Amino acid sequence: MDLMNELLKSLNSIDCNIFDEDYLNELLDSRDSDPFDTEWCRVNEEIETLKNTQSYTDKNEEEQGKIREKAFMIIEENIGGELSEYVSDDFGLIYDSLVLNYEDEWLNKLITAYRNKKIPAGEL
Image 1 (cartoon, rainbow, N blue to C red):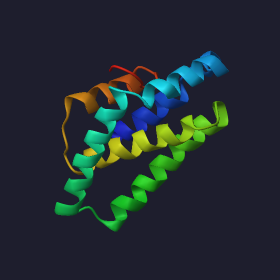
Image 2 (tube, rainbow, N blue to C red):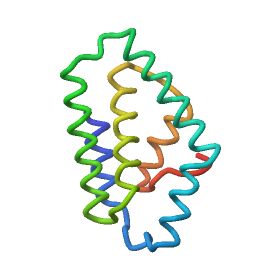
Image 3 (cartoon, one colour):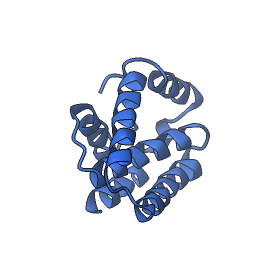
């Protein structure tokens, strides 16, 4: 999965110096609010439905777990806190979308944010 490796590399290149307490709180708040939260939940629900109807295997689940763990550790080591969980969830969502050939305009914007070495939040 070339895209996942590219995104993990970009994630590892994010300038963590900007993540002071105020910036981090703003970022987390904007992820927990509309439109980000609504769109994230919508895409997740659609992907979960596809997982139930397509051949999503135990191997996929295992590989997704490894990617999520890598993303989690990158943020945990550099920033810490709740953001690690959110980023890990994003990477799980992206991985699943690739496995299931799921396309979505909002998800593409989420991926682009990571490609641009940004943690996605708010209006994408």
